[in-house]
Length: 274
Length: 139
Image: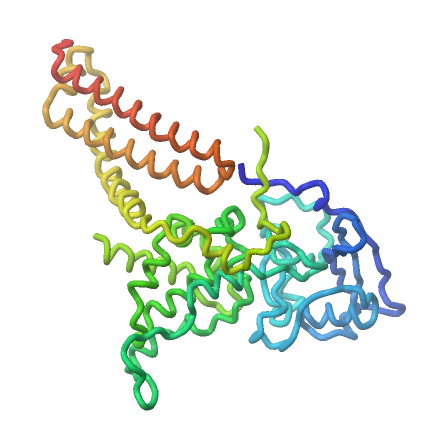
């Protein structure tokens, strides 16, 4: 059966609790997942207290504040700090998001927001974990090898048989407009790692991010390999593990809708079958 | 029942990530399954409405009157269609659930076969009953 509980060596323990800085008046508590592959210990939750008056407004600002001023061993990915590189995707208060575009004030989960979860402590802390159900390399850094290989497997480039024109491949403004809402994906993996189908069958199901990109090339008016692309997706697992759960659309930090793109691929499949 | 670890395989492997993702290739089917589940779903919606009306009409009838109702050709045909459509829909839907959650190879194939057997057995029993009542002159 699918495994729903954590293996013994992945179960969380209570970690170190750092005090608030002297004289801090506006303190926000962060509870952050820590795991070090080298010390042989279980993952733990460390508690940090951030002086909001000394820190920027975003979750990434707080992580950098912690790393610079409290605990330099905290590991996370970050680069552009403006929501275009996708590096700082992580699970913040139960929602996959980019730390750089998620405001600290935004991410406090109201007490009634997760009625199906039992909260041990409603202390107003911000909980930060790595992206769900991915192998963890260290702290908040997941191993995205499989995710990137799946993106590569849909062959995300223009494929043509007609000899290339002297200048560019042309398309009408209307055909170009069909790529809006698709090309903006930054491959942060928020959607794919929020998908329960991907959690259970991520080895075979391509996941929302790869399928959104597959659709982006399926409907590109310049591409000549639409049929072959559909052939490669025509599989009970690669495409049809999507059960329209819609977590992908809910979580996308770029407000894209992978679920709709997948539904459109399913419509194309029906169109050529029925 | 032993649990099978369904997390991504992180064991040391010399296979490239691309090779692992491509796996055994696309099966080349799935659209028919998806389409049939929708078609039987739409059929179920209509047939269940009729089924509810038939059940409501049963209320307060004596046994011979109830048998006579089921023996009516239109009623019998609607019931037969409902049984076929529901059983097919049930088999298709349960197959997806099994594929989602059951990863142990032996258990998966056993569950898939049991699922088909169950749907066929339920449908056969229902159809036998409807035909027996319609044609058997039980009244």
